[in-house]
Image (cartoon, rainbow, N blue to C red; front, side, top):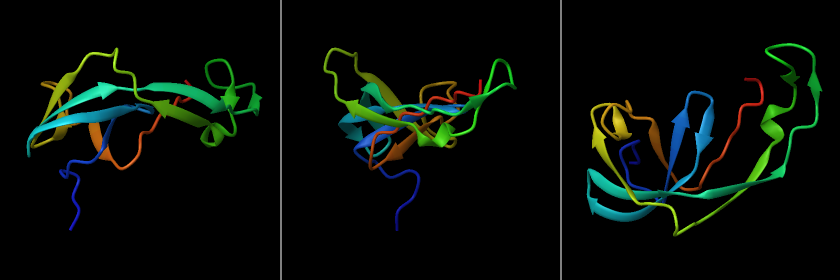
Length: 109
């Protein structure tokens, strides 16, 4: 049975509505891994904006598509599994293990 504590190839950082992709580089233990941020290039951008919100409202926000690639120039970071999930001290489990890298930018903020 799979749980949210299982270690997977990728670990995405959830920053409220935005998501940043990370790759798991090394498993140190069942509760500690080394991760590295990935590059993300926007391949399909939302097209429908209309007046509203702070500047505009993006009607097709979920249509965006990103290409995520490994970048060995980024530093390695350590995250641990706590009672709140995967994260660094004070991050409150904002890192979520995943089978694929995810990048999402919320155009509505």
